[in-house]
Structures are given as structure tokens and as C-alpha cells.
Image (spheres, rainbow, N blue to C red):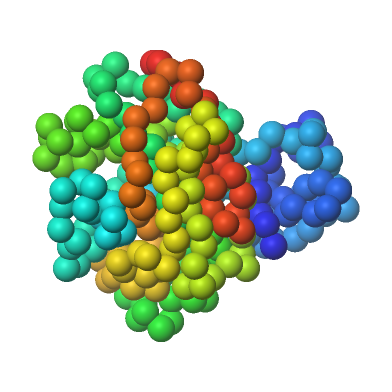
Length: 254
Ligand code: ZN
């Protein structure tokens, strides 16, 4: 199933499921009292929103060998986690706004895990039922500020720096290898596969859950493959995760 959050004339903002003829609106949410309605709204009559509103976004640095190499870094022995604020989230087609403080903003195409249930101190082999599904994310990063600050809160925390979407797919298995691709103005910048992650989804979720309780809707970004690079005013950046779809965002100056 592909789960979306949409705005339409039929209902202000609601969750829905993708069907051949359009979006079937649902009552409740995929986390509580999820129930289909009789209403299917044609695709052209809905606006897709970020598919989820998490309490937190936990991300991981240098989780692909080739990206660590292009950053001049070693692959870490343990995953390096950091947080992005939920206020950074935007949905499909919403603009990424380049902050005046930075001259070097990069795209980072990533597979995003959406947590389905309260997840606390869960072993790797028990992670599966805690995952609702997967979506695509762009871990937008002000690379110059990341270098200058020595930590990543500012570089990765600006408003609009976490595009998410377009849908949450509940049937995917990243262990089988999903391609993760970014394009800028149609040109491919990054191509990777989730089988090349240093720490897999099960290990990431388990390790985060030893630190902090993950709540339904929380999002874990799983790192980016090689090929990160600048985005500038007027660009159109796409992140495609195999099986999820394509997340498209324009880029504008602040
Ligand atoms: Zn990243």
C-alpha cells in the first residue's frame, strides 16, 4: 500500500491510500483508527503534503562507503546520529529556500524509515513490526556551515531542509536493494543502492531505540550515497527511491 497525506476540496487535510483512479481518503491516521472512506479523489484534485508529521527526525552521517570517501572521512565504527527539526519538513513541490548564511547548499538523496509504533530498546531482529514503511527524503545540508560549525545543527536544521514524500510504501524491503537516486534539472547526480548502507535499517532503528523512544510517525534518514553537490536558485531537485516514487522540489533563494 502507498499512504499519502493530501489536501483537497473534499476534506481539508487527510490521510489517503493510492488507488488506480485516485486517492482513497481515510479516517484517522495510519497510526490510529485507520479506516477507508467511500471517497476517491482524482489525482489532479489533491495536493500532496509531507506524508507524515514526526516528533523528530533522526539522521545518520556517512552510512555509505562511497559518500564517506568523497567527504574525506573514514567509515565510522558506530553510526553517527544527528537530529533534524520537524520544522524543516516540506512536502512534494514545496520550495527549498536557500538561507543567506550559506553559499554552498547540497542535496542528499536518502531512504527514510517511517516508524509505526512506540519503539524503545528493540533488538535488531524485532524491528520489523515497528516500521510502518518507507519514503524518500532530501537531507538538505549547508556544507560550508557544516564544516565551519564542527557540528551539524545549523547546517541541517534550516526551515525547508527536509523534503519528504511523495508516499509511504508499506511493502518494500531495503535489504533486497532499492535504488536511491538524485537529479538536478534532470541530470543524475547520485545513484546508490540500499544494500550498500554500512548499517542496515534494522541496526539503525535498534540502535536509535536504545537512545530515545521512537514514536509513531518518527522518521529515520538512512544516509546518502556518493555524488552530493550544490543546488542553486531556480534548480529543480528530485530524489527517487525505488518503489516509493519521485520527490520533486524547486529551489529558491531566501
Ligand atoms: Zn544525510
